[in-house]
Image (cartoon, rainbow over all chains, first blue to last red; front, side, top):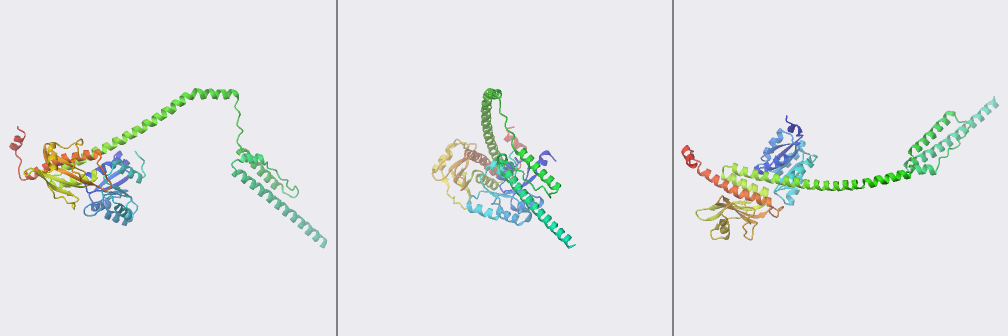
Length: 133
Length: 310
């Protein structure tokens, strides 16, 4: 195990269908040394990853093919092992009713695109109670 | 016998009454002591209370009290006094005139040093704030460059035109916050720009820009890839129009119509990304077009050598 891997105490799952956006979020989160990040293309791929590994935080888009972000939140909240795991929504849907719907389903935070990478980093740090680098 | 019994009863009653009185008085003394102790302990100026109200040692009935009880009480009051003495602050020593003089000299001598230290501290805080601001700027630039890198990588890694259009759509929507836009392609033969991609798909965008239109004239006039320092081509309704040039060839144009609700203008960084999307996107469109045309063709050494003028 490398020194970097031994520091990674938390697992994050990034669910986003747009490859450049997904790469960008993963790249931003790679700045958090304590975090190991896994990518998923959509909600179904996310459920597949979740079945394999336990995640401490999930960051997901809403508009995705097959299984969208809101359905994913609903499925995760129905699962006792994911009832308390923080879920951050990252979406272009900026209307207040979209935000309220996501939070009512159990999302922890709601960020609208275009996102600023430092904003995502500090939010994840805050949620996982990690000190700023 | 009866007289003896009577005498014994009288003695017993007297002793009982005496002992009861001793116990009652003792209890009252203890209660007063405890109340006084509690007041002393909870009062902020406990030392003053102690000195203002000296504890009077009560006189106890001497007869009939066991020595052990008296010894316990003496012990109790001794401990009480020790406690109070320990809590009383030590009297402050009055400095001598020589000590006063010495302290004054030391204060005067260290005055410039302390002023310099304060100034240094302020300067250090200022430097620290500037460094933090620099670091934040550097970090923002770092992420902007990374965004451009991932965008260019995506544009040039797709081989089919529909995938390329999807990527351009995702980048414009997710990274610049432009919600409604149209990607036009240039029809070289007819000399007009026609809409190829509308975002969202429900957005009505069937109008073409022919040679006579102001948009077409503006877009063809540039003759090179669009730069951030160039103004957006304006039509009075939209955010603006950006030509898509692959070197000197006009491949298409991006008509940016409106923003997402949470966005209201393009930043310099958004314009940089749009310049990249327009240029690399145009090259990508040429590439996917050429790739589609050359799909059935086989590469030969002669063809390659001709291309390289070898």
